[in-house]
Length: 142
Image 1 (cartoon, rainbow, N blue to C red):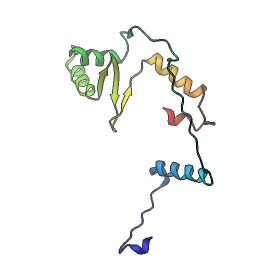
Image 2: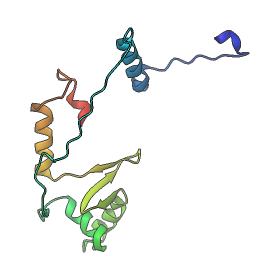
Image 3: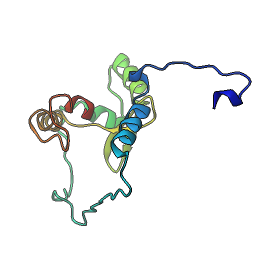
Image 4: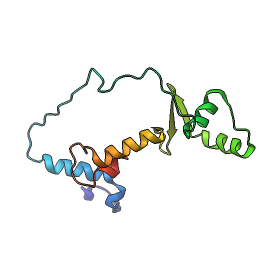
């Protein structure tokens, strides 16, 4: 195929910088010789957890100042703390009463209370890693 072009440059990209292509190549290698591939999908109609009527944040939670500022513009009385909160709050948004942080790629990450974060981390460490086995699966989940 390279013979069809006047000029051709080849750049080697390290595997760690090209994870998606690496995963696709592994998938293709595993699928070689397979004529038909079926993918099953299951949609849950009923949530696995009960719905919460309202969420009450602990007044000591780190999220409270951000939520109060984003809801009604209230700032701490200390001018330095107020300026710091205004600057940091630009990365946060409120959706449905929940606080989210926008990461550099533009994705919204749900902010957790300290108690909920401990629970999630314990589930990742001790809980089920889905179809993956071994200790290498949980760091990618966080």
